Length: 66
Length: 413
Ligand code: HEM
Ligand code: SF4
Image 1 (spheres, rainbow over the protein chains, first blue to last red):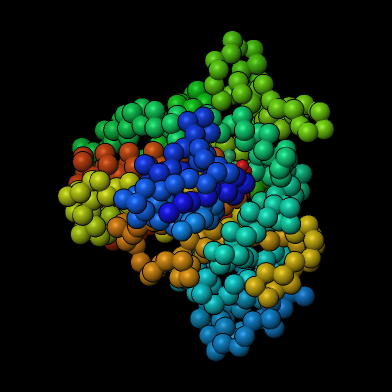
Image 2 (cartoon, chains in turn yellow, red; image 1 turned 90 degrees about the vertical axis):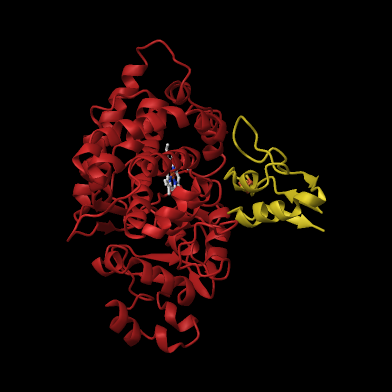
């Protein structure tokens, strides 16, 4: 599974990293998703966490690419 | 134009007669945020509107719409080109009140400010405030624990957010906090609109004086210095002094009353649900998620406004250019299309898609700090006062408009 984090929609709620800290990291400086605008790989054993992170993003900024 | 009902399918529960009978007024065509019925039956009204009334209209003053479903709120909040913040967030804004940066501005001006302000309230910085905030929580509890009772709002809830923000972030003395808390509260809820303006002016005056004083002091490299350094707008002009003052005012408005409401509501819920209290005492690791669920369910920001920059249609309702449109974050956080049993509080709920801290570029800049305050409060309170209840014969009192506030909460243990 891969996920894409929308560069513009992400406004730094930080929810993704709460549920899936091993997938999503926040930029130390401003607290936005550090991979804004990128597509990243999700390890198989992190998929469930990643899905919760995706669900809890109030911006729907993260899309799952199966 | 204003007849919203004509565009929604007929449902016996949403006819004007049924609405008047149930809510005391035709919610769909004649909504009023300041109606005492809304305050009294807050949960019921939110739950009803998010299910049955995607868009409602108010005839109060210059009039406004309320957008209620999560998908519509998110789409509008993210589409700042069509739903602009530059004409303010308050419905029927008092004349002459200066606009507040960054809240009452649009990108790219808004982006300039957020870029320099965000680092001062990032998750990392706020995690570092956990310790001083916890000390404050305990210092406040010390003032009343031996008495076996307290009035939670004045003795704790209205103080902690002000201490957390003024002492730890702004370095402002907390002596004048009571005046500021009262100014923000009355400026939001006073029945008379001129009186609201007078209270806001008092808060403006106080904070401007403080900012001016800081220009005479050596720099500390803090948030205030960042505000004083200012930003350059895209047209090459420097942000004027009034914008700098308004940043400080906006942060103060945002930073004090809102967090008090979530805190008070969570403590009230725990006072009246011993089994929930026990759940969190037995497994404190649930508290972080509980904070999220309480923030979802007890929204201090009911709705904030935008101005339509062109004719648009939202869930079948036509909205004309220039109309004032409120994003009902409180309704969006209870949308059954996005979560199960949204009318229930469930601290074990996983992946809570709420909009209590707003959506879009104006996402609450203080959300990370508010979370630290709420978590520290619940953790320390439950450690020190694990068994507490509502004082016999009392119940909390509330006031509601575009914000919701708890006025009193009497506890005993
Ligand atoms: C539980 C507590 C809080 C809640 C529920 C809350 C809610 C919100 C919401 C819904 C918005 C979005 C405004 C919009 O869409 O126009 C917002 C913005 C804002 N909040 Fe908060 N807030 C809280 C705490 C704080 C704190 C602690 C601070 C300051 C330290 C703060 C400062 C602000 C500021 C300055 C904005 C404007 C941001 C912008 O326009 O870019 N808030 N808040
Ligand atoms: S939850 Fe969404 S908006 Fe927040 S940091 Fe993660 S991706 Fe960005």
